[in-house]
Image (cartoon, rainbow, N blue to C red; front, side):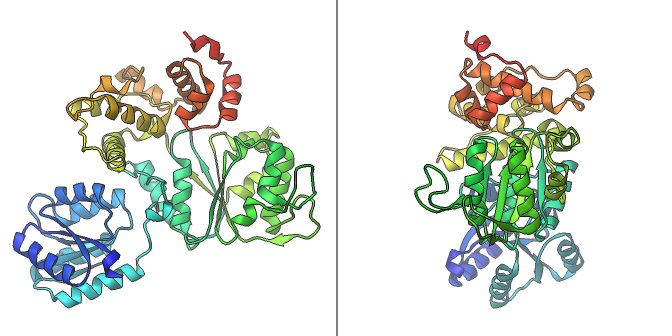
Length: 449
């Protein structure tokens, strides 16, 4: 087990760092060394780390401050503190604040190794880690809305309750759904995504429930449905508000009975899967207007998670932007790049109707176009003007529909009216952009020039 474990050791005393490195390397661990808290945070952004062993008293950034900052990015990364006898009360307080344990100096090397192994054998896995494949972690930040979301998500993850994730396009609803699965007892079981927004209603029934050979013209063999494929794991229904009335009835029956019947089949099959759904629509309003079944709405929303728009968490933008830049450069083996204060201040003043997805796309453009490893506002190719101070209060009441409309207009401008390219830029389906363009009376021809 040890050879697969990466330990970050943090201490301002070089001799202790060397002792720790020698002891842990001899035990088979891979180690990364940091002489201060800020250096440790830089390593955490670039390296896969399984556990942190840190001094609690350091001049530049204390162990407690390091714990607090680490928790905003990796809420379940285990940290063991090393403390002098006189600072044991600080270590106890650190454990209450989220550290998993502490050892007093001078420490016994064998005891430290045993403690690391014990912690790793029992600590829950971080949502969004390597098991999520290519899925990116969400950046929690320190804003009140995101702190609340994180706390509720980690509580809900341990249950089997159905969860409805609400939020505008681009806020990261699918990432939240993935993290719910990865933090749950079902994390080792299938995670199945169904894009209800792009799958035609005539095909969706067969996709979800499966079919038997000969049940319709092109059914040349039996096919397992996606609900059954999620047995034991999690079924994620993205843009669930787009499904037809007929499919709403079938889905409701599944949620009530937890059985399915394939298209053309006679027998029903039991399926045990957790259902997470997401939408950027006002599903409650649709239900009240009769566009969406009210009983299905209440079945889906046993727990509701509201992902805030980026404009409501502006204080997170500087660290979020650097987090996205670091992730892109690391993934593409590029040198690290800095976001100067001028750029960060400018980013905080924009409207961001496309939310985190728009910020991510803009920063990737900036990485490609910038010079001297400094990303400047002009490198991002954004049409936005900073929001005047007087307009910030009104911005808080910026409607979901207006935000979505402006994001589509911006995408159509950048792609000169090519809806396929605009859909890819926004991360939505072609069917969805066709629907939304019609909804907002947007003619692609108006953007071709």
